[in-house]
Each structure stands twice: as C-alpha cells, then as structure tokens.
Length: 286
Image (tube, rainbow, N blue to C red):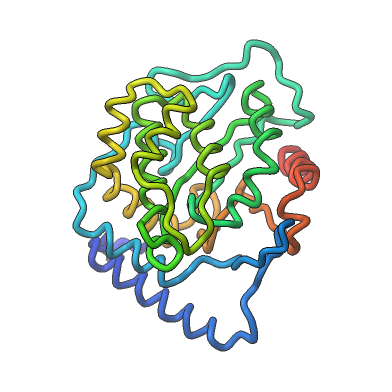
C-alpha cells in the first residue's frame, strides 16, 4: 500500500473477494479437470477451496456482531505448546526438560483448517499422534487457524462455521483442552455434503475432552458467539498473506512452517506421517 492509499472498508474487501472468486471460477472452467487427491479409502476429494463457499462465508458473516476471542492472538490462530497448554496472556508453556524431537530448532507448525474439509481430516487423523507427541513434549508448537468456507453445498446445516465457532468457544473458556477438541472434531467429521452434528452434539464432544466452564461453552456454541469474528478471520486468511510469508491461503489444509508450505501430489503423500516428519525436520533445520 502506498502512502496515498487508504485502508479498504469491509464492503470494499467483500467486493474485492467476490471479484477474485469470479475470476477464479472463470479460470477454473478452462481447466480440463479439477485437481484431486485420493485418500486411503479411495474417495476422491477436491484439493482446492470451494470458491462459492468463500463468497458465502463473507456474506453470511457480514451482519453478525463481531466479538473478539481473547486466545486467538497469533494472527487469528491459537498456539499450543508443552503439555498441550495454550499460549495466553497469563500462560507461556515451557517444557520441563530439553525436548528431543529430532529437530534442529523448535518448529512452529501453522495449520489452517475447515472442520468440514475432508482433505483436512485425511491429513489430521493419521498425523495427530505424532504432532501431539511433539507438542506435548515441547519439541514443537502448533498454531491452529480455524476458517470456514464450506457452509452451504459442503455443509447444509452450517456445520463448517458452527464447528469452527465451537472450537473458538473451547479456546476461550477452556484453552488447554483445545488441542484434544480440535482432534475430536476431525475424528467425528461428517461426510462432506451431509448435515453435520447439531450444537448439542458439539457440546457433548467438548465435555468428552474434559473442558472446564461447560455452561459458558454451551452458551457460546448455541449463540454462535464468534460467528462474526470467524467470518472476518476467514476473509483475512483468504485475502492477505500469512504473517511473515507471501503465501495466501487457497484451500485447506494449509500447513506452513518457517515460511514454507507443505505440499503433496498423491493421497499416499498426504496421509503419510513419515513423509511429514521428514519434511518438518528439513524445514526446521533451515
């Protein structure tokens, strides 16, 4: 931005996003076929973001009150460290001993997710155990950035945004249970295009991972308290570069470490914990 330019209004940002979505749709029509990845169950899923869902996310949140969550202070993400504790204003997790994860430095793994995204699930479920081990011991930290663009065709009862809101609610009132709640959402993910669990089920999932402040979390989920903020955070993620990089999120999952994005070309590569660990070791050494 030059000194003579002014910050765009929210309306201008939405119009720019719609124009971008239209251009991407037109370009998409010219391609012979969409990029797909094949997960182990042989289900073929789209590897690109659903452009129509991006626009829907912007429009659906336009009139919602924006309530700022207090623990998403890492560029709209929550950071988890040793002991699976969240970094908050009053807590900075420190490992009790020198961690040995095989990394030259302690990598910070940034992951952008949509809880209705099947490719996110394909990555998350097989990689959960090793990521949890690294983070729990302090060998790595992880930043989770929930976004929502799959309401509508991909999520008929707005499960995408409701699940993301529920995750933010857990982060707000029981932050040290966020990692396990995030994992539970992927373990129980509904099939894309089908109605997802209702709010009562999301509340039970939160209770199942041992959250505190159950009443506050239940009210937060039922009110969809952070829906407006989530829409804004999704807008920012899809239109501005990830902090410290020139990467703009084009789809989920987006996994970024030290300014580099993890990529794959086959389903086997996507679901391989060994491949991801090898990549992380290489990036952490740079």
